[in-house]
Image 1 (tube, rainbow, N blue to C red):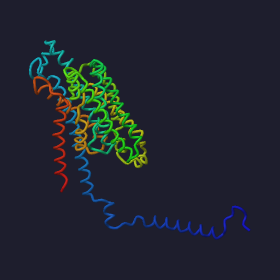
Image 2 (cartoon, one colour):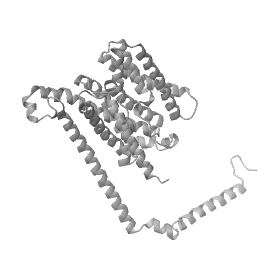
Image 3 (cartoon, one colour):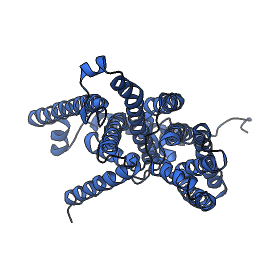
Image 4 (cartoon, rainbow, N blue to C red):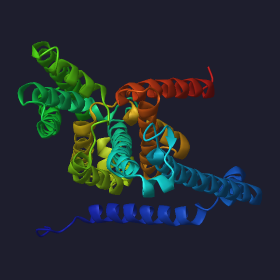
Amino acid sequence: MACDGAVPKATQARKLDAGSAGFLSIRLWHRFSHIRSPNQARAARGSPLNDVTLLKSTEIAATKHSWIWFALTSGLVLIFLVSLFLGRYPQAGLVRLEQLQENELARLLVFNVRLPRLLTALLLGMVMASAGTVFQMIFANPLVEPGFLGVSQGAAFGAALGIVYLGASSVAVQGLAIVFAFIGLGFSYLLAQRMHIGDWLLRLVLAGIAVSALFSAGVGIIKFMADPMRQLPEITFWMLGGLASITWTKFLSILPACLVGLVIMFVFRWRLNLLALEETTAFSLGATPRRERLLLMTAAVLATAAIISVAGIVSWVGLIMPHIARGLFGSDTRRSLPAAMLLGGIFAILCDDLARLLIIGEIPLGILTSLLGALIFVILMARRRQAVPA
């Protein structure tokens, strides 16, 4: 009679046999695991020629990337400096350095009018390009841009409210644009939580489309009720985008929000490589997808809302620049996001230069970014179609 907890001898024998078999299989695996087929052995060892080729290709890629970084950085600095002294006043062309010393009007023009405007254009390009990179990686959709979650249309609705009902005060227009941009994001987020179709990202995209349509209808109602001689043109020109009204006060008012958003996106840029994966895969690799996506989206929307509040709706920068950056550096956001920031700054400054210089008046910035952005997009798609065999 076996006592409690005792194991029958037959069971012990079966366990011993299983353990012996397992131990034997481990010994056999260690003994023969090094045996490979001739092809596997050659692939494992590699040939000296392949090693040299790989090393050379790596060095060539590193050198190429270094030259691209140098070209982008120096190009941005050069374009900024030339744009600072280029204009129609006090005379057409470049302002000479001796004029800055002798002519007070030239000094005021360069440092009080052009400098804050160019800094805002630089900030605009960097914010839109980095936010576009963040949204395209998070949603795994190359056609997403910063304002698609109801942000742009929410900001337009807030600005229209300020123009019509609060006397078009710049503080009111700017403040309401930021507030309603975040309201648009909040509505999109809450609506996505209420929906029960598809995964989280799909629900958020659909909710953003619906919220954008609602705010667009609201803007239409406000424009219908606005004074057609005074308020309606002001709403229209705000929505076309432009930097003609930028002052040091406006620039400094949006600088903290833009810098906070840019710093968060830059510091967490390497996490975007994980967040682009499926949620379970990203979680298994150490990411907390829902929390980190919310943090990065909030940072992107914060900076986007701030810049939209003073510049109006300027599209295509956040859509095109991430594509060009990925074409130069690949999809690794550790390199592509900073490259997109530099490219966005260059593109926005050049478009603003054209807006100032093409005609005696001024072309709205949003028209030029849309026109040039659409042309660049067509060129990129044509080149990609040629690269892919039929």
